[in-house]
Image (cartoon, rainbow, N blue to C red; front, side, top):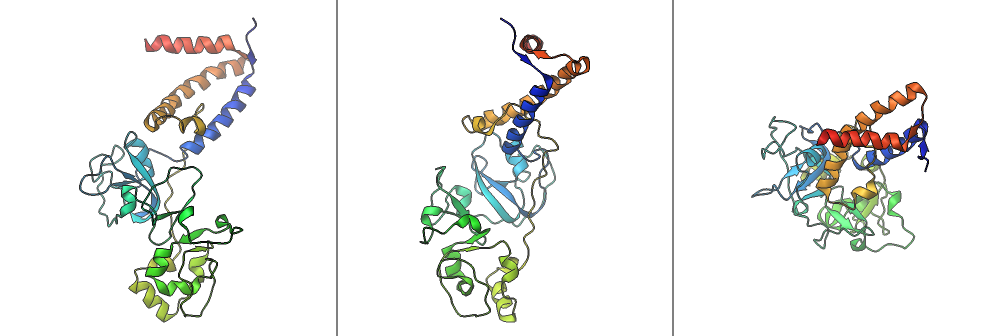
Length: 296
């Protein structure tokens, strides 16, 4: 039986697609701790929790807490990675003073109902004020035609109740309205546009209320610290669908191990390109046989 013939061009096209899929799984640099107080994606590590909760940045949750029980908390304001503080960090030894605030979400207790849902059909929305996550099934009632995906931000019922002066911006349908009318509006949760902070009233009385309620930050544009992108998506044979079906620590270890193999394989393929030869399955088998022999 003839070997199946695969040209180098065909192989590289397949590799490019696999790289895109792998990049979606681990899109950011995992070699550098965030190292400063900022709005950033934070993960709660229940394995490292003792008396106090522990929140770590994107890079540290992959590099230092791979096999730990972690919870993705989404974006957190003015938060500093705790990894160095608990002597767990393999990326940095620089201890940064922090003013981190912790809440029930760090223990996996989300929403009004206090539960965390792993149901893929359940959508959760993060409150822009308290940073809690609310299940779609726990939202205040709306018209069936309402589409929350058309709105960039969300504030929960609990926060509108606590900061009732903000209800002046809330319509009966739970959407945002720009207004200078300072009367109490509808006390319910609300979905907001991406520029809602610029539309808030800045009069003297409102500025005093923002300060009194510790909400000065909503009058400013939010600067978010995103992890640095990977310099190159090079995890060739890893796909998000596959990673979601295996143990998290094994999946990440497999991705990182394949990164080294990828470099060797592409260097080997360059010899075929220079000679204008096609790559046959017997050539691939020989390459991996040599790899196995070196490991023995």
